[in-house]
Amino acid sequence: MATTPRAQRRVKKTTGYKIPPDLERDMNALVESGEFANRADIITASIRFWFQYRKFDLRTALKELLQTEEGRVLIREAVKKKSKN
Image (cartoon, rainbow, N blue to C red; front, side, top):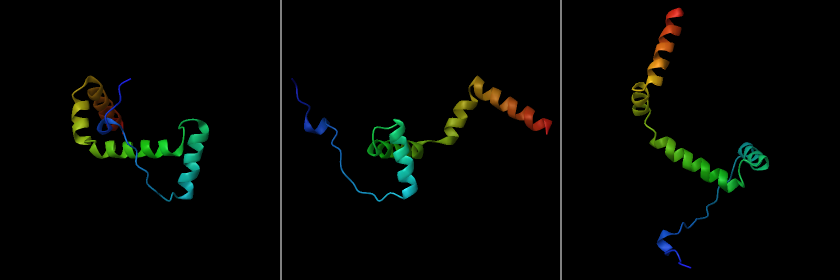
């Protein structure tokens, strides 16, 4: 059995955070519902989402959408709706 070199392994670090009671309730509900295995998974998913969100370029995404048929249909529908008002 081959071993993975230490540099390639994903080493997790521990950190502390005092969570507000409302977020703790929401997180516990997500774990109890089975959507997440534990609160650490929720925190990891949330941080990953935040970093992806920060990289998201709305201007580029809109330009790409408007170059598609779906984007052109959305614009036509919005113009029709606006002209009726």
